[in-house]
Amino acid sequence: MRPLRFVAVGDSLTAGVGDPAGDGWRGWAALLADGLAEEPASVEFTNLAVSGAQTRDVLERQTPVGLELRPDLVSVVVGVNDTLRRTFDIHAVAARLDRVYAAFTGRGAVLLTACLPDPGAMLGLPGALARPLTRRQRAVNAVVHALSERYGVVHLHADAGGWVTDRAMWSADRLHPGERGHRQLALRFHALLAEAGLATGTAPSPEPDSPAPTRSASLWWLATAGTGWVARRCTDLLPHLLTLAADDLRHHARGTGSRLDLRASASVSAALAALSVPERPEPETA
Image (cartoon, rainbow, N blue to C red):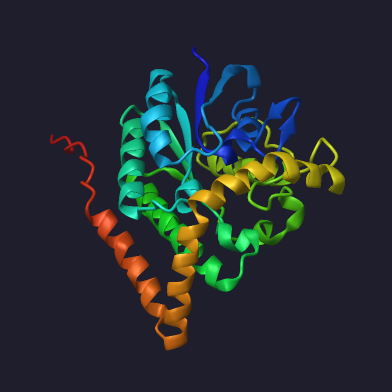
């Protein structure tokens, strides 16, 4: 009997940023892999997630490699980096995710997906700067919700709840979970899989096995690795975000802010309507 094959695709969240292990990262997917079967050695786990990845990277680079591994279980958690780019296009995001979901489920794999917290709120940005990012993340979450239902996947609502506002769950950059947050994600995914009879091992512990980083260590991380991240986002996103914020302020001054929300909702509906309906096998007749 071959081992259970679990493949994770996505961005820095799935790559494990915020949950250090040796010279690298561990993360929720690795923690989950240890609890999928009674004998952890009977699970083959491959993490293809890359920090900074967008839906295009998952579709074009990670999915082909993942398919070659013939996985039984695949996690697809991605989209935040798309919202942090000036080129954000919900139609393109929906089309790419649809192709990724179809590719893996078409090979018989069980899919794990999640909707994610709003990066504008997590970063504590002022209202006019945060609201455009909120609309984008809501749009991505709406697409993930719809496609998760369409393909019958195991879906985690990770965009709300006490864990989102609990600072103990998050790393110094406020965008990535710390070890406690990664454990919370693994624990919640494990519960969904166990309920579906797809996880038979011991659930991950919610308690960290390493001490939380000191304040000085967190500040050092932000001053080194974090600085590069901020610099890249500032050159790509910030000028465009300022334009979006100015438009948001004009609408709120006129009392027409709801139009921006309606426009975002209409874009999601149009993006989903443009997708082809997946073919279903015809029922057998007696």
